[in-house]
Image 1 (cartoon, protein in one colour):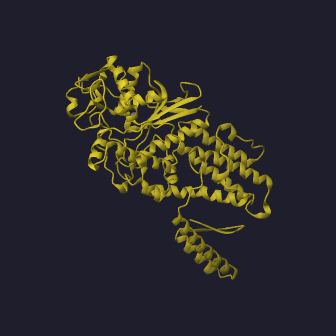
Image 2 (cartoon, helix red, strand yellow):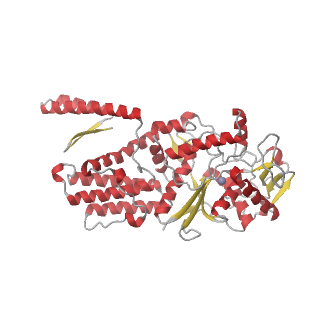
Image 3 (cartoon, helix red, strand yellow):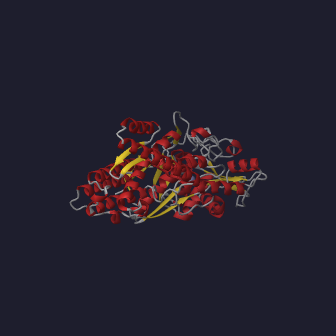
Length: 514
Ligand SMILES: [Zn+2]
């Protein structure tokens, strides 16, 4: 049984979707006014893995991530750049999608854009006005928070905490708690016709309208960063629950935010106290490029999307992720343990790990361990991994089980001397393959090592040269040893160690690795 921590009830609950076998997930996506930074990738990477796990567990999942392509910030930025809001949104959406792809996020089913759903947004607001939950003041429409007796439950706030709104529109509200659903157009701003005159929607209503359109009035999981709980999700919940007389969402899931290493700066995300006029806070914690904001494409170039993905998944999604490039570097080193095992497997079996089939559900991944101690151990690691994932998608815990699995497999290869050619025991070979199938199943659930990482050309050239030089070093060391010149042999080994290269003597010759 999968258990999920629900922000609304502040407890871990058994996961039972509204409709047996089907799950709808809505994750608040970006406002596309600037290039994405690593903070924008946290939610997508986590929910990409959550969707993979739910599908593996037998659910048919629809995952929606919205794009906010009309907003104050978009208007300001597009004016600065002297391009249309639409063009800016198109360019920044393309940037966002490229980054998602680099990080292996390919499970999103629908990405609705606010401007494509204007008629649904307007219809939603009309319904709130008709039912007496919202009011129009000269073209600005506000949600009347006092009409919602449950308001504040999600974020644990009382009505005394205001929306923190300022600006001209604030003066028109009946109460400081009320928030804008529709904003009347200022001259030369992009606008749409509505029953209240030309204008554009507030941010919160977009998500209520689009989630209803795609997932229905009630759906299973609503996700987002912790900084969205208030006011954004509280307001979404108020709008939808009042409009439909239903709870809107069964499980509210919030991921921890990313902070720059060594200080309290938040990498992206929104300020906790919303200071804007019903929009996302305009004040984002300032983070310089070196601290992680911006330059995501460069970071991906330097570190690879897979490393970054693994870095984001190695802690629990509800905890804060401390960003540092050194941390990602460390993660990269940890990933070589996998790569070395894949190489070992290929040397022994002649098979590529990346060509092994991926078990796409629990029962196909299951196997009979018979009396084999090693396979019983593999089964144990697998069961522990799945138990961690069942427990509120604890990817960090599951990853530690993967490292245990690596250790067990390496030990098995050592003990059975599978690498030496005259010891090619068929049964042991089959056990190794089963273990690698399990490895394939479990890594694929996290969206890592799905495909062999393509090497770019310059990397390929450099690596080719390194390999040739290393083969020369190994040959010289071998020669020295053959001549009993152990001083030279040791000097080569120690010298390489100083630059971070380890030599391992194996039955089939010396191997080197970084
Ligand atoms: Zn939203």
